[in-house]
Image (tube, helix red, strand yellow):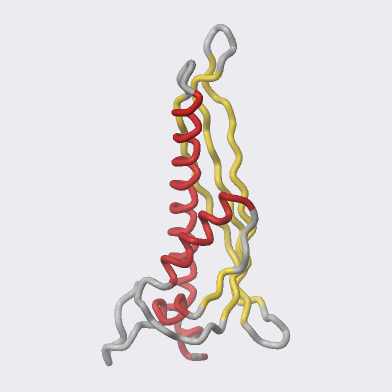
Length: 153
C-alpha cells in the first residue's frame, strides 16, 4: 500500500497522504484524532505542498453495559465514529472522497477508584482515536492508489 514507486520515489499513497491538511476537530477526543492523523500522513517525512483538505466529524460516546445488583456500573463500552470528506484545495473545494471509520473499546469500572477510572477512560479515548486514524489513513491510501487518481497526478 505504501510501497515506493519503481523509480524509488514515494508511491501514490505516501505522496497523497503527505499532501493532506487535517482540519480542526473539536473537543479533546478530536485533538487526539487530529494528532494521530497528522502522524500517519507525515510518516514518510515528505515535504510536499498541501493539495487536499480533510474535514472530519468525530464523536465518542460511552454506554454502561455492566451492572451490579445495587445498580452500580461495572463496565463501560466506548464507541468512536468519524465521518470524513477529502476536498481538493481548488476554488470550488471539490469533494474527492468520503468515508466512515468506527472503533469500539471498553473498560472496567472499579468501586472507589475514581482516579483509576478517569485515567482508563482517557486511555480508551486515545486507543479509539488511534484506531479510527488507522482506518481513515488506510481508506485514503487506497483512494490514492486507484489508477484513475494516480493518472490525474
